[in-house]
Length: 210
Image 1 (tube, helix red, strand yellow):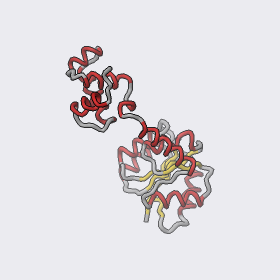
Image 2 (cartoon, one colour):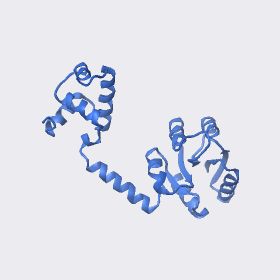
Image 3 (cartoon, rainbow, N blue to C red):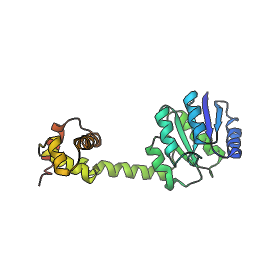
Image 4 (cartoon, helix red, strand yellow):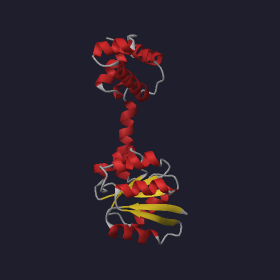
């Protein structure tokens, strides 16, 4: 049986959702929360399978609560319920680790369908949102690795490609060596590489030193 926490700042909405879920023999509501603090406290103290989360909760900044729950218990699946249309927050919610996004105008049948799909390991999104996500992924994949970097990260990459040391780069850019090290770590992560040698090879292979 899947255990569920309902998080919404309106008690009448929580009651309505709970009534819908109580009709399903394989779903069990084990808690309710009306603000961000209560959500985090419940998640910290209890094991649950699914969080039904209103992203507009008191004590939270937009999608910040989703991010905090994912940090605290990354295994919990999250279905976002919102008054806002998909184009407003859905893409950001998925990028932060949500497993589904539904507007509060959705039917009870659609809510159950989304929950069941997520509980079974899938993700729930509308066909329109699926197309937008696919387009974004294709766009990212079509970019060269260095095009994912910020302007300053690109500068650091090019200096690394020239074989300059951390202290030399820091002096050139007028920043601290620690800051250069931070940029280097970001570059390696974004480009999925593990060493300066790999970065130098990439810079030379792609003829970036012009």
